[in-house]
Length: 215
Image (cartoon, rainbow, N blue to C red; front, side, top):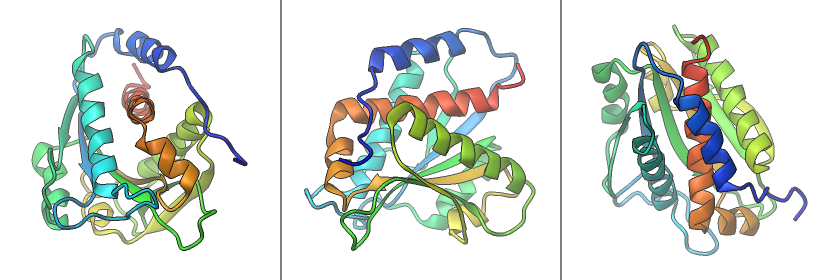
């Protein structure tokens, strides 16, 4: 495996985030996590049969679980909590209704090339109120996933995805492609529960430090 994913200790990651979250919060921030696809829309299907809709929901639910265990949890909502299909327009409305500070859409990639690998983080390609901040957040997320877990970085990219285009006027909005289900190494990695926990914790820690960097 050319760029092996790191076997990072979950305990070490958890200790780091507990130190960060134990510092107190003068104002509470709101995050909307969007597990992509769902229901009859499976999204990408891996070579080992793993489905994108299940992977991203598992990660989102693990983010929720880890957050609830903290002394001062973030205010996190999901666009879906189980295997249901939510329209893109309804996903986009939730951050506006909740007056969210961050919207993060979770996905997995697929390619006809079985060697394609790595993380991509997307920002809307249209200019909006939070374009610059969202771009900076995208770079931070990609760097953290590369540094903490060893995922190869494929760059921050710009696209006209509806969930990004329709949320970027209300809050920072990014879409994460968490590796390729068509790549045997990354597909096997993301199938393991211990690695789902590591990914969830890494994302949660990065979002927290981004939101409260000024405290």
